[in-house]
Every structure is written in C-alpha cells, then in structure tokens.
Image 1 (cartoon, rainbow, N blue to C red):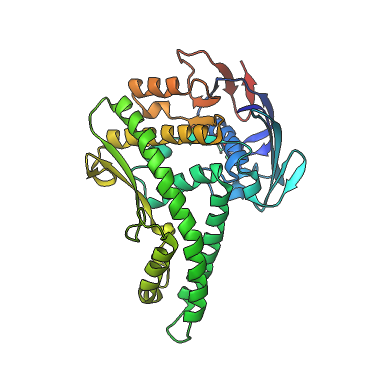
Image 2 (image 1 turned 30 degrees about the vertical axis):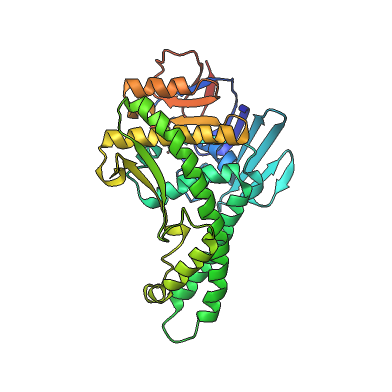
Amino acid sequence: MRISSLELSNFRNYASASVSFEDGLNVLYGKNASGKTNLLESIYLCSIFKSPRTTKDKELVKIGEKSATVKLVVERKFARHTIYLNIDAQGHKKVAVDGLPINRAGELLGVLGVVFFSPDEMKLVKESPAERRRFLDVGLSQQQKSYFIALQRYNKTLKQKNNLLKDYRGSANIDDMLDVWDAGLAREGALIIKRRVEYIATLNDAAGKFHSAISGQKEQLKLSYESGMSDAAQGEDIEKLLLGAIKAARSKDKELGFSTVGPHRDDIKIELDGKDSRKFASQGQQRTIALAMKLGEVLIYRDGIGESPVLLLDDVLSELDENRQNLLLKMTRGFQTFLTCTEFDLPYPATKFLINDGSAKKM
Ligand SMILES: Nc1ncnc2c1ncn2[C@@H]1O[C@H](COP(=O)(O)OP(=O)(O)OP(=O)(O)O)[C@@H](O)[C@H]1O
Ligand SMILES: [Mg+2]
C-alpha cells in the first residue's frame, strides 16, 4: 500500500502543511528540530491510533492552538481510503474513515499498515519486557482485530482487578469478585498468549534468516515466548492452564496488591546460541537482533495481509554501520518508505522533501 498525500494542521510544529508522496523511497531531510519525526508520527497515528513517543496526546496539538488535524490518503490494492484525525487540546482523539466517524480504535486498525524503525526500536532487545510486549501487540493488532479486541478487554479487566487488589486490606471477602475477573482474564489472556506464540514462531524463522544475513555469523538466533505460566507454548488448553496459574498466585497477589501472572507479565525470550541476549549480547549484537526482528515484522505483515506495509525509518541510518544500512535500504525496495535524515547524501534514487521549521517541500 502507499500513502499518496498528507495534510497537517496545527499538528506539533506544523501550522499547516500539505504534501503528496511517491512510491518507493521518500526522504525527509532537514535540520534537527525541523519536524521530520513529527511528520512520521502523524502517519503512525493514522495507523496505530497512538503516538510512538508519547501517551499524552495533547502534546500533539501545536502549542497555543485548540486542535490538530491530520488527513491522510492511503491507496491499497483494491481501495483508497481517507483517514481524518482530530485531536483537541485535552488530548481527545476523533477519527473518521472515508467520512464516517469511527467510535472504536479497533475499527481504524488495518486501514493503514506501518512498521516503524527508530533508534528506540533498535533498543528492543535491551529494553524492558514491556517494550517487547508492545512490539508483539502492535504487530499482531495491525493484522488481527480479534487480537486487539481481546487485548483491550484483558487490559480493562486487569485494571479493575488491580484496583480491587490495591484497595483490599485483608478485611472484605473479595474472592467471589476475583473469580469473575479471573475467568475473564483467562479467557482473553488465552487468546492473547496463543496468538503471540504463533507470531513468535513465524518471527523466529523470518528474523533468524535476516539475522544470519546481517551478521554473517553462524550464531543461531532463537526467539520464543516466555510466560510466567509454565508450558504456555505446548499446552492445548491454555485457558485452563492460565486460570490455574492465576488462581495459584491469588494469595501472593492479594499480599502484593497487583496481579502477577498473565500475558501482561510475559516476554520474548531471545537467545544467541543458547545465551540470553537480553543480558549477554553486546550492543552491536543487540542492534542486529532488533533490526532482524523489525524486518521480520515487515515480512509477517506482508505475508499475512497480502499487501506491503508502509515503512517509517526515523533516524535509523545513523545507528547502523554501512553494511547494515545497505541491507536495510535494499530490503525497503518494493515498499513505500519514509526515511528521515539530517543530510541528504544517499546513493539511492529517492523523492526528496526538505523539512524546514514545520514545513515540507518537495525538492
Ligand atoms: N505541540 C507542539 N507545538 C509546537 N511545537 C512542537 C510541539 N511538539 C513538538 N514541537 C517542536 O517540534 C520540533 C521537533 O520536531 P521533530 O522531533 O520532528 O524534529 P526532527 O526534525 O525529527 O529533529 P531531529 O533531527 O533532531 O530528530 C521541536 O522544535 C519541538 O519544540
Ligand atoms: Mg527526529
């Protein structure tokens, strides 16, 4: 798929901008703080409905303004959609697709598919488990609405349960209430775990190939799902296993005041020749693995959906050596790609846009 145009008004440092894009490589170049990442962020928002860098959506509105809008046109194999996003000064977001208001974020997912590469994403291996869960959740939600819905329900129930556990002071009998929450958590949680296990199995193959191509080494990359619940990967009846594990943790959870077992605590286990890369891999090795995982995400999306996602490459070239830069750029052929950099000196054919103080101009 491809983005054909983008209009911003009062978004971050853009008062008003309108740009049309081309197939292939679109390079956004300009000085620091000119608005390159802001532009990618606006595209990301139209896909995931969340910013990749803030949870405070009111920051997206240009300082001093009442609301921001983003209008994006995406051309897919068989359809063309206009996504219209409005964010007010309180940070409330509204979306419409093709003129029809959308009430739930889940409805927007799947209209525009993106994979985001950034220096932060390149830290995926050494970051906390929460970042790796986010990687899974973003990848899966873009492909499967049912996953996103299960995740939303799970998180809502988890919040209610944690509130109950937090307020619990050992006096009232809360077991009946917990039974209800736990049944819901096990049901939604089982679906989440099952899909994550499948996703990681596919990712393991794709990322493994990229990893050997990038590193040129014989070390074997292995990705697997790490769950606080034993045998999550093998168990046929994950729901039953999960419910058992949640119940077994109940007295501990009551003591601690929060829920300690379930997909909200799980992780991706990453190994190189059997050694835990989250702890032992060098910085370079960690970056190579992260790059391989992101490239894997691209292929899984493309093969799953049957269309190419749009690639957003924010400032990643500076993070990579020449070899890895070339590999990444070679890989982006056949995908509409947005690449930000401070100076334009790429030996590749590209459409160039000069970003300057909240304006974007095709050069
Ligand atoms: N809500 C806002 N209102 C006005 N300006 C904002 C807002 N949010 C961010 N900015 C401004 O946008 C600029 C940063 O833009 P951005 O992060 O896109 O820069 P960049 O071109 O990616 O720079 P770099 O090359 O350093 O990554 C900063 O000057 C920042 O102050
Ligand atoms: Mg930037």
